[in-house]
Length: 360
Length: 232
Image (cartoon, rainbow over all chains, first blue to last red; front, side, top):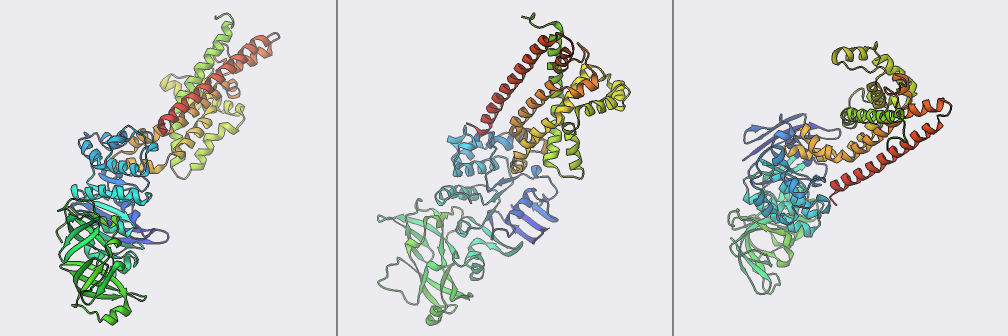
């Protein structure tokens, strides 16, 4: 399943001009508000006619079809449930207008936890419930591609934490490419298989999430504060003192309790500013996680900081330290050092499901 | 129970109801169509169409009646064509009274429905399209249910206007008892003859009752439909 996109559209104040090929999985369009992300998925959905467009899904050209013939599921930022229909009728809408049997309903209702809501109307649903119904409605219309435009922007952190596992399940459990718009990096780090960084209508960076997030150059593009690589790890044990032990290629990693069974693969986002470096194995330190690493590259920013890219037995990690420290330590590519990560600096929302990911 | 009105008065009431119902029902599809065009489409001539629809509201009714007579009278271009092709005659028939009532009520009908359509978020219609609904299906399954309260409100106000239509009707189809004499023209006739006040007063009471009943009915209907949409 691949989606080829080539777009050119002139607006009054900027021009959208880009091309990329989204592979299977979840491709995140990341960028500031107004950079053209929503325009891209509106063009894919057919709600906007660009000046020039070539959009093809597995070789089938979409650009000349009207929206209702594209079989593209769209989860809107504002939900857009039909207020005059019940949840059950909203879910069945796509199948009803396409005159298809509603075969998958029970599975989707289970997957999204909609069982108790079917008889209700949108007006009586909470924000999180509306988002879930909107996802279910898009899925049940039999789409070949799913578009999601900041579907959870209106939700608070708690609601978001509640719904992100459902999106992970979609990404890993269904053979459906997803194009996901977001400007929240932690969300992107958790969900994306592939990331497309959009800046002022152009593609500033594009690639697999693990590579892009651990690349010091793109890290600057994504925003220093939020920069951080993702590690894939396997849950090993739930320990008595509230910590979970995970196995990475470079050694054990202890994190605050991750609610998942041993053996489960998870992806953990580790913010660059939460990683310390040491030339020798430190003693008498409160931080639990000491991972031997190799320096791959250093990348100075405009300010006093530098971004250090590390190799952790094949996986990549980013550390943000001052240029002064890097100089004092004499850091250079190829050097063997230790990366130190405080367990408590990894928040629950930074750990996501990675069932189908390869082992780290 | 029929003796408290004379046959002439009964026939005026019956004719008024028939004219108003036919005028409202026949103009409803056109009203929805024009309201939809005015609310959702932008094209050269938008203002002209809008003005044309509102013309009967601002022209003296006598002028509208006279224009109808010129256009739809037996020798008028539309009147002659309709009579030749479909056998429909408007001049001095109840059908003419219905046409006059429909034309006079049309601006009110279109206005109410247009406001309702403008209140429907086009984003909902986009959402329906991405789910596989073609434009006509989007209209039938999303737009139409959402504007139903507006359609009811428009139909009721059009019906009330049709019941009260006087100037254009009397100019276009005259005031023939049993043929084109509606409640308002009957009241007018009774007031022209000495001793007709009693009959006129009875018809005035009836007009009041019909108007009140229509208002109450529409309130109740609108509330029910609105509750259905909001899901409470």
